[in-house]
Length: 106
Image (cartoon, rainbow, N blue to C red; front, side):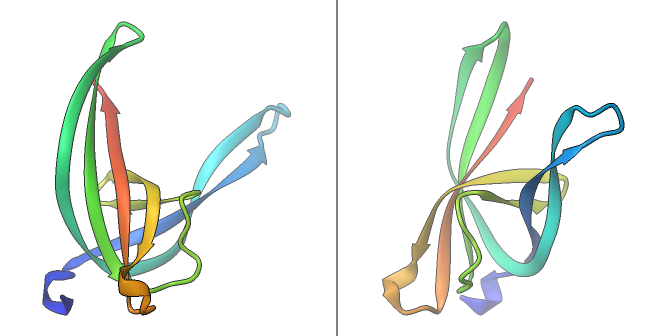
């Protein structure tokens, strides 16, 4: 599995901030960089808000970490993958499989 983890990805957290005029904003901040294996699993398109929206689901495998949750995302190669589920492979605390979704309005 180690040899397949060739993508250096960034795990990001979302934080609320306030800009100069006092309005709230949500920004993503880098937490840590890790090596990962990224596999596309499925894709779909839907018509939403007068646009076609494409979604692709991925399985991302990383070394075990305790700080990865569905509130975070994986950022790689100018692409953002929203984490939908975190699975501890065989409950052995060695690997995490992240069910993630990449969605871009076109």
